[in-house]
Image 1 (cartoon, rainbow over the protein chains, first blue to last red):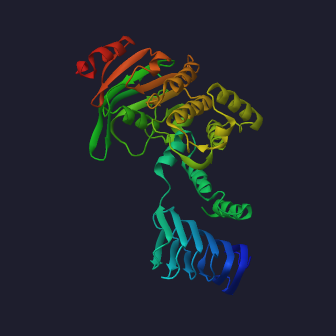
Image 2 (cartoon, one colour; image 1 turned 60 degrees about the horizontal axis):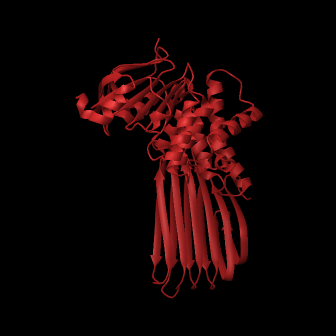
Amino acid sequence: MIHSDNLFLVRSDLGTTTEQKSGNEWFVTVSGGGDFQADFIQTKGPLSVTVILAGEDSKCQLNCVYLCNDNNKIDIDFKVLHKSKKTTSSQQIKGLSADKGEVSFNGTITIPYDSQECDGRQNHRGIILSDYAKISAVPQLEIWADDVKCAHGSAIGPLDSDQLFYLQTRGIPATEAKKLLLSSFFNGFMTPEFDTFIHEWMAKNV
Amino acid sequence: MPLLEIKNLHVQVGDKEILKGLDLTIEAGEVHAIMGRNGCGKSTLASVIAGHPAYRVTEGSVLFKDRDILSLTPDARANSGIFLAFQYPIELSGVGLAQFLKTALNAKQEFLGQPKIDAVQFMKRMNLRAKALGISADMLKRSVNVGFSGGEKKRLETFQMAMLEPDFCLLDEMDSGLDVDALKIVGQGLSVMREPHRSFMIITHHNDLLQYIHPDKVSIMLDGRIVKTGGADLIQTVEEQGYDSFR
């Protein structure tokens, strides 16, 4: 852990070369059969991760949680280039923005013409907790090959009002109901240590 | 003193008036069926009593235990003794049923100024009630309402109600989507909950559930109002002559 505001955990670096310009800027190359898996938690500032799936059958999985509050700004930029055929990538991003927090997420999946039989996935879900908080997401798919699987989704919004009402009809006050829904949103997404960090951050800041 | 007393209730969603001067009184211990065709405002009535924020009360009053509840939050109403069993129970992905019920019970204890519920006592109570409604240990571990069939969800609503022990049970179309076996389990689960201090308002458009929990009174709802209140014999009138006969 290199920065108290932001955390990362590399779960697999099989066959990878990682160039880290700083804690917030990553450039990863994955060779044939390699597997890069990493978790990130971002509470402030920029995070840029570029992964090149250079060899056949290489894989990457990027999981990211952002937690933005106060007047903080978070800028996340994920790029995955499927340079070889039969490569697989997954980007899972979840987060919240409270107070006057501003989050921007850019996620790019590029699959060039020769990279057949690739699978690239990206999913983003952001929860807005105040009228002044902002989240913007720009998913970009640049797909040139024709025999590929690709999926992306992004959903940004407040907590579900039907769920809140349901919890309240069971006697759970609104603030506690919101906490319960937020914990369930993040629960089990990352390692237990990172889950604890997320819960502690929410208890202190939301 | 009635448990629930509604006078001249007018309710809007957006610009549309749905309840148009509704009067209804339910005594303590009473089982009161509300019957009416789709779209007459039955579910709106249940949601308004529970405090759904989408409905705007423009006129009238709702007294529960002699206290005006319209300014109370839904959780304060629940902790005062109102339970709404949903027609379409909401899925809470990632929220385990046992954890959910414990949070709810402790919220009520806190509201009443009582100490938190003991974990062992809670487990005993939960296992006892779950068994009576055919709810397995596996179902208790799963997320609330996620991946359950319609019938299972209704059983889980009944189970939650049995755990929270409300004074007033509002059942919104509890019998919809139930096959005969599930209906029997839910019906029996409800009938054992009958107590002299506990009232039921059962919204339905058939007689199915009422065979298990016999109503003391039946009210017919038509176009946002209660147009007739009588005994259980009204059910037969509905079945023979339909709702139009009350116009």
